[in-house]
Image 1 (cartoon, chains in turn blue, red):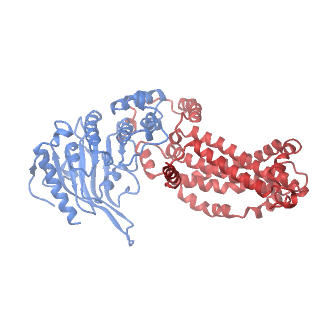
Image 2 (cartoon, chains in turn red, brown):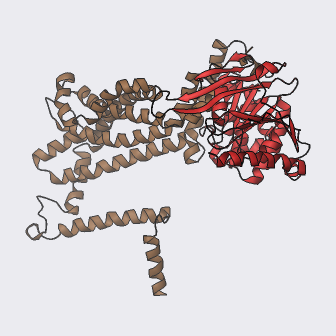
Image 3 (cartoon, each protein chain N blue to C red):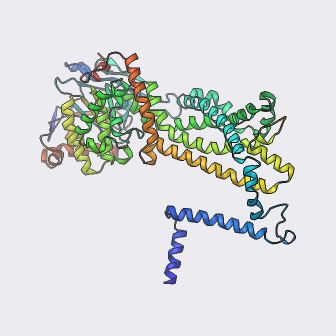
Length: 291
Length: 318
């Protein structure tokens, strides 16, 4: 683990160590205290997904932070995300504590919305019915939820008149992910968990979705946890980047990133942006070659 | 010119999965029927003694079809078809009403599935011809016995197919529903069951065809004074030596099955427009009946409507 003083790499600043919950004064949105997850403990196929993960995300007043998690493949990024979501089998942790707003996570809930890489639109529901699914579960009256649903379909850059009553299979991959994001954001979650949401999209759609996500994130003021394989995506979107070790994963470094000042496409040409990207890429390449 | 035609013909017939137009498909089907009829005619043409196949084994097409009006009028074909259909439908509907809820529960909760699996296994593998005499002991020789026979023959399949369909719904849909705040019951009723429904429907559609075959078996056992049904008619014709009538009924049964299957296919298309396109008339109908019920429910159970601005805040941890 690097114990050198904070180091500036382009847009990013590598902190001298990963901050622990004790050090951060502001209220904590998410904190992990020595979390380890081991599957099939004691058996021949015992596997530890994450080991001794400790970090803290503070509640920045008026806006949530955008956290990106990067690391070599199979390092347990999804385990961290699904532990926050409270989804089995990653939840509950084998040891350690996962806290959200100071409370231990006991199970999934709409306060921690999640967007998956696979298209998880409910195929039997139209776009509008997909977007309003969460409100339906809260027993919001139909008229109210349809109104709100249309508003969000519009915000996601879809055409309310033509797309609201389409079925997911009639949509492109990018449009499906828009529906999935709208379906989560409409519930105004405190935390948004995104597991490589743009992983299956083509590069151009991906850039558009990044810009859209930044715009919407500013509006909903949630803390976002974003897992990605794309370092450019992480540096563009993230306020903070966590860099994970090889499996069993733990957090190696924490980087603070300057906020992006222009669109994804433009940012990704700036030298200081690239400097941060290259720094992380070298780290990950080194990790993967040691696997 | 000639060879290019031959080339195209070969290419059309021998290319893997070459699409075929609807018209062509129907034409090819008709060609097959005509071929079979011709074969039948060739085997049975000429005077009775000189035929390749004797009239006692296989009557000629003309002899067979000439008996149709007799079958229709004197032997009340439609009434017998309806009697048979009613038995299958009641027995099968019973199997669906009991089998689908059990199957869905088993699919949702693996422990219940494990608990039921010996019964399902026995139910699927039990020799039905051997069960039939037992059914007569238990339910007597009347209608009840036939209906219950269909029920017993199909319920285990309905349960296992429904359970399988639920289990095959990808876990990511459950995860998604949970992170959107759905309760366990909401996840079952709004996600798992609707996503599994098309699979369950297809399985049941096929099973109905099988049940239609089983009823013949039940109807062919004659005890005391029986009333009607195609299987019963076949028994009578067999005893009287009416070969033509039996062949006709054997031809009628697939036609009835075809009509029923087409009706079921139509229902399927209208219920699941997300799979089969179209306007989903029956789905809309279902929704129209669900909406007032839902509003009524929210009036009774959820008195305080959730306001727009605080739609989700109430769910947040303090």
